[in-house]
Length: 222
Image (cartoon, rainbow, N blue to C red):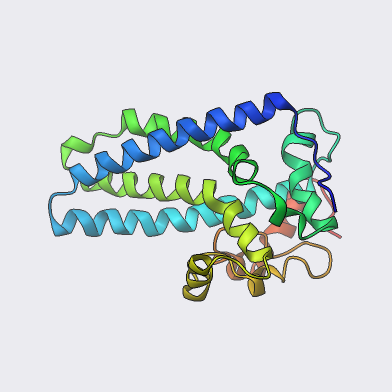
């Protein structure tokens, strides 16, 4: 099936620019973190930050997915054609995502992610030797990278034969798996929203967080 989402040239240029800027800051940020890590304790603190950040990325992916699925619609000004439609397209045609290019998959998230990464690059005091600075550096880096890579992982979960590297990551549980994501495509698309790893889904679904949030925001989840 052809793509249901028509992306204007201006938005594609925005995605390209945001992705290029994000990658530049990501490389620079990683270098600053590496140079600031001098001891084994520093590396453990950074590792803890990276793990927490990956959990945050999964939570952010679920929140964005939930909002894209359950609020507004494809005709909503600005958000509709550029952000809402891509989420809902793959409900109609689950394999549509497989045909999307990498820029189309990462561009929208890069638009939102690069300002935060740029701010952290300039504002975090890596030279202070503070454990909190190193932890926050790992957390922010992992969060931003995980968020921007989310739709690549999402695409892999829709592929019949993902790349061999992707299959290794799926087997280790480090990225979203086809089996886990199938839960979202069962029924009313109202659960298992997290699409970075899916690690947060069990807790969020068990607590009924999304239904509760919809009631708070005045939307009947039924």
